[in-house]
Image 1 (cartoon, rainbow, N blue to C red):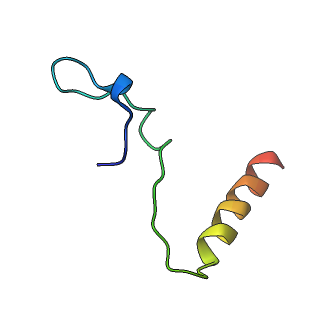
Image 2: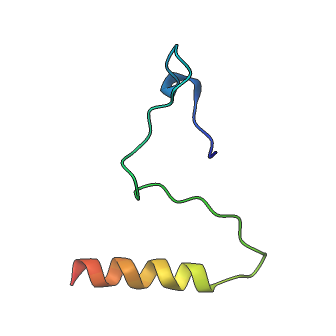
Length: 48
């Protein structure tokens, strides 16, 4: 599970997160640029 600060956790053990698909967490190898290019292309397409 991704990191969530304490204020997002409810007393019953559930966590409040952003809507599905709005959270993205990745650990990339050093020097890996393909993910950055992919995100840049998504953002570029979204504003056109």
